[in-house]
Figure 1 (cartoon, protein in one colour):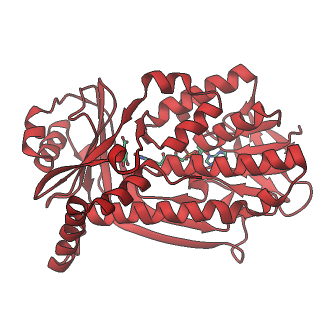
Figure 2: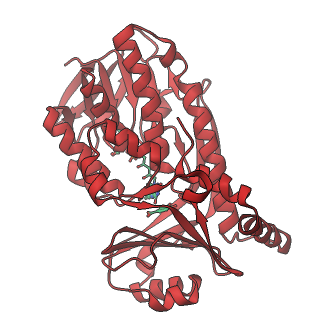
Amino acid sequence: MRTQVAIIGGGPAGLLLSQLLNREGVETVVVERRSRAHVLSRIRAGVLEQGSVALLERAGVGRRLRTDGARHDGCYLSTAAGMFHVSFRDMVNGQVTVYGQTEVTKDLYAAQDALGAVHVHEAEDVIPHDITGERPYVTWRKNGRDQRLDCDWIAGCDGFHGICRPSIPEGVRREFERVYPFGWLGVLSETAPAADELIYANHPRGFALASMRNPHLSRYYIQVPAETDPRDWSDAAFWDELRCRLPGDVAEAMETGPSVEKSVAPLRSFVCEPMAHGRMFLAGDAAHIVPPTGAKGLNLALGDVHYLFEALRRWYRDGEAEGLERYSETALARVWAAMRFSWWMTSMLHRFPDQTDFDQRMQESELRQLITMPSARATMAQNYVGLPY
Ligand code: FAD
Ligand code: DHB
C-alpha cells in the first residue's frame, strides 16, 4: 500500500491532520491501534480555544460545534477570600467554547467517512521505518497478517505512550519532565452544571474544578493523591468532598446524581525536543503533556496540527520545504508557552504535599494579583483563550 502522509494514531490530532490534508487533495492513511468504539469512549478534554474552533471550522467540522458548543466569556476562581471572575471578553475580547473531545472526535470521524478517508483500526505492532531516509514506511499486523505502507512523510500522532517518539534515537532526543505529586479524580454526571461558567477552586483540602459538557451533563474534578484508585471513591464520598471545596452557595445549590464515568488522571508536564526527525513529525501528546489545569492538552495538539498541516500543504502545493524544516522550532515555541501557563495554573491552585507556610502565602499572593491587577487577569485571559498561531 502507498500514500503521501502516513498518520500513526487516530486521536484528535491524527484525525484532524488527515481531514485537513484530504481536503487539500493530499492522500493519507490513519493507522490506529485501538477500535473506533474505544477511541470514541474516552472522556477527556472539554474546553476549546478560539484558534482550535477556527481550525475545526476550516476542516469542515464546525456545524455541530457551532450549534451545540457553549461560548464562555470568562471563568471563576474560588479562593479562601471568596470567588472572583476573570472576564476573557473584557480583558482580551476573547472567549472559549465548551465542547467535549469526544464530540470533536465523533465529528472528525463522520467528516472523514464522508470523504472516504482510509483508516486502519486495531493495527498491532505499528512501527515507523527509515525515517531518516528518502523512503519511509510503516508496518503493522492486522488479523495475523503483516502490512506495509510506503509514504513521503510520517506524522506521529500516537499520544504519550505511542511508538513514534521512542523511534527518535536517544542521542538526538531531549526530554523535559515534571511529575506532580497528585492526580485528578474526575466524575461525569447527568446533572445540570453547578454554575454558568467553569469554577477553578483553591481550597485547603485541595484543588477542585466544576466544569460541564452541556446543560444536562457536568464534569467535576478533585485533586487526589497520585496513586488513588477511583473504585475507592463512592459517588457520595465524591460529592461530599467536592461540596467542601466549592464556594458554600454553589455547593448548596449543586445538583448531584450517579456518576456515568469516574477516573483518575495523573498530572505531568513533559516536552520532547525536537518534534521532528528526518521524515517523521510528532504532533500532540506524542510530543508533550501538560497538567490539565488550564485545559491546554487538546488545544496544544490541535495547534501542532495547524503548523504541520500548513508545512505539508506548502510542500505539496509549492514544493517548499522550509515549513517542514522549521516545524519543530515553530511548534515548540507555542508548546513552551502553554507549558508555562499550565504549570503556573497548577502551582497556584493545588495543595502540594510538602507545601510550606511560605509557599502558601505565595499562592495567596498570586491569587491577590489576579483579583487586584487587571494586567494579571489580562495575561491569564490571553493564555486561557489561546495564544495566536
Ligand atoms: P491521543 O488522544 O492520546 O491519541 C493518540 C492515539 O494514538 C490514540 O487513539 C491511541 O490509541 C493511538 N496510539 C497509541 N499508540 C499507538 C501505536 N503504537 N500505534 C498506533 N496508534 C497508537 N486535556 C485537557 O485539555 N483537559 C482534560 O480534562 C483532559 N483530560 C485528560 C484525561 C486523560 C485520562 C488523558 C489521557 C488526557 C486528558 N487530556 C485532557 C489531554 C487531552 O485529552 C490530550 O491532550 C489529547 O487527547 C491529545 O490528542 P492526541 O491526538 O495528541 O493524542
Ligand atoms: C476541563 C478540563 C480541564 O483540565 C480544564 O482546565 C477545564 C475543563 C473539562 O474536562 O471540562
